[in-house]
Length: 88
Image 1: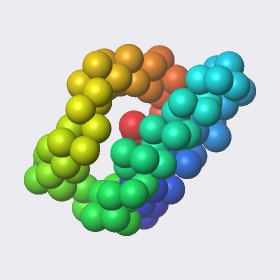
Image 2: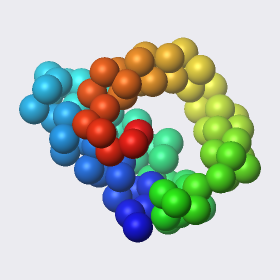
Image 3: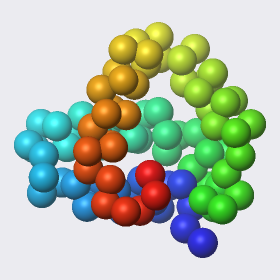
């Protein structure tokens, strides 16, 4: 079963041809600074991901990056548009 980290990399590689380079760079940076550096989340296999893990990651992310709330809406909308069927 792939981990959250592996699925994030799959998603990014899947959508990179569908977005401008500047957008891909923003996604890559956001992924590295807000997801992949959170070991508990990124090492978790997708089938073991729980709401508790997500909630703790989210709280820690919002605390560390106060601008997260404003960016989250845009990223969530965009991820939904480019969902490749990977379940993200």
